[in-house]
Length: 475
Picture (tube, rainbow, N blue to C red):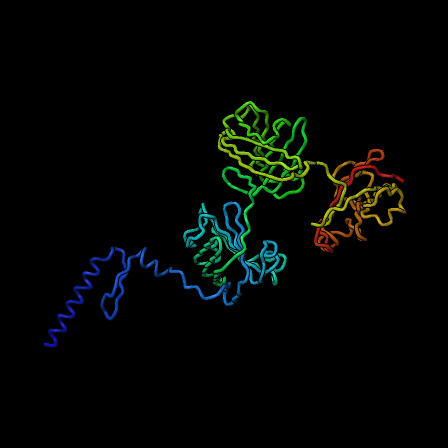
């Protein structure tokens, strides 16, 4: 009787397992316990969920890089150009981006569409195009000037990591960050957890949007032209109008005096205007004007206020030969002067310019020696005893052409003296005072124009550059 009961029980278990297997999806994994099927899990659904389930975050706000755990005490988020930039730091009370950049911190950015989503790294690869993410961990306390931070992007994460997940969830008052990445090839595992309040850096209301890609509008210049004003607008953070030729994009919009009242001008109408869009990255210039709009449509408005500020708005589509370029911009503020002249000044590295007001020259033995000073009205060599810059130029090189330290015996006669050190062919080179330098000089009567550079001065870890054009006292 006992054997019969055991047989019936085994038969029931077998029939149950068979039914379980028959009812399971074709691609399934079965769990066997004590020789019997205890459960079925569908591949691509249940199994993947179990395999890649996000780990439970440990309590606290921290970065765990390998075995090194660092507590996080400050967080801020800056949103711009459809992307949220998250900054996390172990330093307490950091509430500005500049403050974050000067201490140990982690930067994490995600496109707006990824906010609040679980990101699986394996969905992103080298050929991926679309929403992106980025992270970098800067340990400024022990990083040298040439050291790179730990970091990866949506395009190259697989170089350092086997896989992982990211979650960035930002509300008006709360920030949640969970990052779990598994390293490979000697790269440590990385884990980041933060759940708390944050400082919100508001996005600038001023924008410069090209072909639908938004950037902050960072610089504006105004130029008085004939009977109107031309505004130059760009997303580049420049302070000199001469640098417009080096930015990715900029726009020039001209309106006559009669149209600077903020009225909306239809670019296909008969109101006078000019708009030039410059795409330096692709060597493209698009010019529109009344009667010459092509297939483009949209509007322009510029208002000049009594306090010298301007309000400008551009919204145009269908520009270019293929009618596929668009531009939208909005700016309010006091623009800088559009001035392409070069100031009489010199600068060392990122230091502020030092204006040059006086020049004295001596000529002897086939050499011109120029003394340049920040003092005004200096006309003697004695008065130039403390000259800021002293430059020697052979007669042959007073021809408005750039001449460097390296070269012939004539090149060896060029020298630039600054702050007690003389830079020339003999003193410069890979192990010298600096890497090298050059001058460009021209003398016509009592007018001299001279440009000079000394590159990579070892003493300052910076380069020296300057320009002077004007009256010179020749002794």
